[in-house]
Length: 317
Image (cartoon, rainbow, N blue to C red; front, side):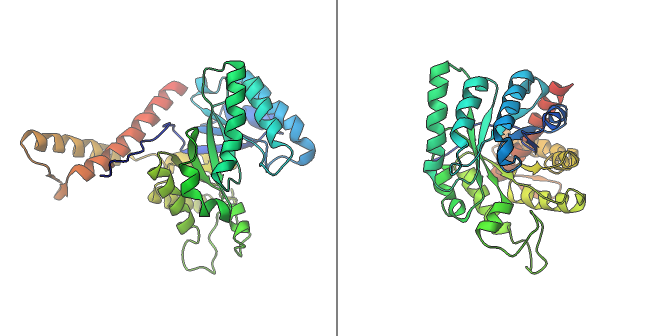
């Protein structure tokens, strides 16, 4: 093991992340009552230019009026991009009026570490000026060729950064990929054309202590397609996926929750290795298979996720 270790900076349950347009207060209210672990109130792509200012006001009202944490949810705001005239007002107004209620800001189309530095500087100043005690985190969308080319530097670039998200639609456009499906597979490609990009982003997350989240699957009338994409992402190490429609929340929660049989096996692995340790052995056998310290590290990952799920479920009851 390297002497350089980067444990998870801020652990949060993020199996399902429900995207909600800030221009629709009714959708925001419904999201607060949903089973989503995470809700992001969108000021960017889901909001037309003519509605940007009203959406910002709606989001601030929702942050102040709804106790998201009491409902067992993390609430985030996706601000507009740095290349727009909206971003600086998004950050300043959300932070000044609801900086004590929002958990993270989601920054779109991050291409270089300096993009996060720009947002972080504004957040720092507003927190200091208003004396906010909670520390608002940042999350970055990796959805351009430039962002993927710099993903490791971005992951290491800000101590406020908590998570990276894979924005498949803009990533496809940035790479001029021949597809018009958001997150779906292209029959002209022999496999999963998003595998490399998603895997690279997840590796950067795990190397630098960040959460890794897969992005949207656009066809919400295709639950099997969503589940298949979520399973691929979970297999690579992602811990959650966006839901662009409420019907996708339960699917994401299902896929990214370890089944009870897996949890029970993880408990047995830890128990057997404790017995082996007491007898001076570094390895043991369970159900005809060798287990060792690496097995325990994998088991601990499952148990930590199960504990987080149970804690959140208890909070919601």
